[in-house]
Image (cartoon, rainbow, N blue to C red; front, side, top):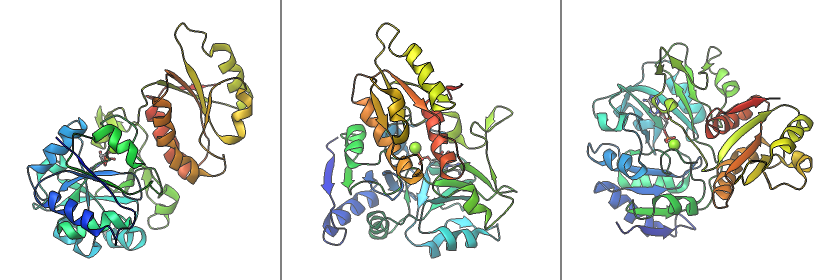
Length: 345
Ligand code: AMP
Ligand code: MG
C-alpha cells in the first residue's frame, strides 16, 4: 500500500489535508493522526469492517479493544449508556483531554471495535488536528496508539512513519505529542471505579471526583483473567533487553559497574534522569530529563526508547523512579517496557 504522508503545520491553513484524511476515514480507510497523548491510528468506529484493518496493520491481538474518539462530548449518549451518575462529572472535568472512560456500549458500536466486550472506552481528545479530523469525518474514530503492536508508542511523526509507512492510507504529521503518554483508562462500570491504565490524569486527580477510585495493580490478573484485555500483552518494549534497577543511585551504579558489557556481545547503556548521569561516567547514558519534572520525563520516555532502538545497544540498565502521581504512570510504562524485569538493590 502507498501511504500518503501529509504535513500539518497549521490545522486551519492545512485544512485540505485534514479533509482528505476525513474522506479516507469515511470510506473505510486508515489514518494515523496526532493527539495530545500519543499518535493514534484511526478508522470509522461505526464501520464493522474497518477495525479489522487496524488490527492487521499493527499486528494487534484481536482481543485488545480500541478506544473510540469523539470531537463533541455532547454526542456521547449516542454511543454509550451513562449509568454512573458521575459519568458527566468526569466528562465536564477532564474532556477534552487525556481521560478514557470505559462505559456500557450501545449496539451502534460494533463488536469488532470492542473485541466483543459489552463496554467501550471513549475519549474526547483536545488536539486540534484530532478534533478537526473527527468533525470532518462526521463519525467517531476508533483508534489505538499508532505503533506496531508491542513497540513503544509514537510521539513524533517520524516514529509513525518508521512503524506504519506502507501499512496505512494516510499519516498526518502534526509535530510532537504534548504529553507523550497514552490516556488514563478509567472503568466506571465497576464499583469502585478502577484505573486500568494510569496516565497524565492520576489517581489523585480522579479521587477529587470519587475518593473510592482504585488503581488496578500493574498485572491485574484475577483468576488468570486480565481486568483489561491490554494488560496481558508485552507493551512499549524496545528491541534491547531492559532491566529496571531499584535502589539508591550509588548502589545502582556499583551494580552496573560489575556487569556492564561483561558478557560477550553485550552493547549496553544506562537510562536515567539528568541528576544521576554523573554516577555512570564512562558508560553510554541516555537521560529522560530532570528528576523533579515528571511531565518532561513522561514526554521523553517513548522517544528515548526509540532513539536507543536506532543504535546497536542490546541491553538497557534503567534506574527506577520513585514517586506518586505521574511517576506511577511513568513506571507503569517502564515496567512493561522491561517485561516486569525489576531488581531491588
Ligand atoms: P491503545 O489505544 O493501544 O493504547 O490501547 C487501548 C487501551 O485501552 C488498551 O490497554 C485496552 O485494553 C484499553 N481498553 C479499550 N477499551 C476497553 C474496554 N472496553 N475495557 C477495558 N479496557 C479497554
Ligand atoms: Mg498502545
